[in-house]
Image (cartoon, rainbow, N blue to C red; front, side, top):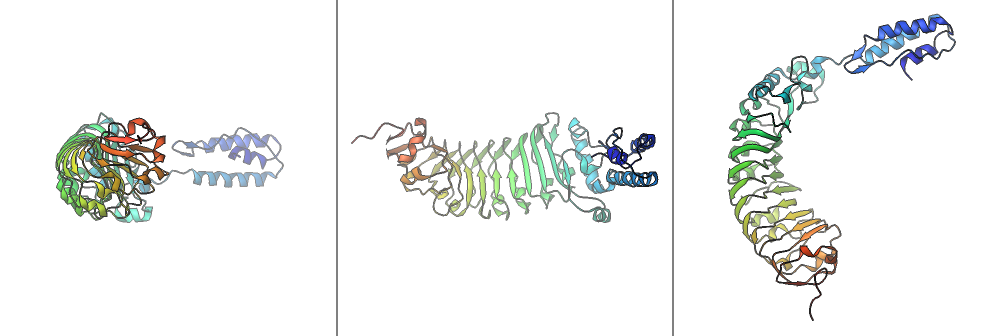
Length: 394
């Protein structure tokens, strides 16, 4: 029920009802909250009530509506003055691109597009100089160009999340100033024109939990300093031009769930034996030049392992000795030099949806549960047989 209907129902059954409703309409026109307005008052369903009571109750209802629709205090949405200045420096560094069109003086900075502030109460925010910016996102805009303005971003002392995603005009190296973001938990610079090395100074971000630098033009080695981060549990450095070996202690402190993507690079060496102690959920090391044994990624201690992609490397080990976890949903080890056979237990994996062991040196009869997969998943091996491949010869 809207306010006009309520007022008319408590008015007299006479022309005064229409007159008072019109007056209230005129008063309500000035009560607005940005895009929210009081409902129309031109529909009148009147009931009998004494006029003094009707007028009094009408005023009470109008006052309540005014309070409910009053604009929130701008100071409640205002970020810390230092953070506001830092954000304006970011905007200037990118040439005042159209992405930042909402970053103006008449809009509270905690409402600026791509900006999120903490949930500090208004009294606390006033006492501390304003709410702190905890997240900054610049994404999906080809008009944003230039280097990452590290010095400006580093002035956001409370920043926890930094995201540059699908902004191909962002270029140059990752700036060292980002190492000063001591509260940073999530860093994403993905699908940009950023180049240079994966900086070793990222090892100073002790609060970091997730690092995504995928789809860039980064070169050099994966820095061993990342292995020292006590909370880091997710790393995605895929689709770059990285070389060298995988640091043996990478994600060794990840805790109960670890996620690693290093695909589509030029990494060499072996899969670290130390990975046997990491509780991986997802691992993608595909399309590199890795050699040797990768069995450390499997085994009884990998209860949470759901997806493994080791395709298009030069790995060589006996697959028949692997133990697959019950939760395994996707396995791709195609285009390697893996020998042995497909373990019988693989046919009993109820959650397995994707399985590809093609282009290896496998031999022997496939488990019965493999019959539901396409033939291409097993082609170009030494002597695999059984459904969906031709039957084994006696």
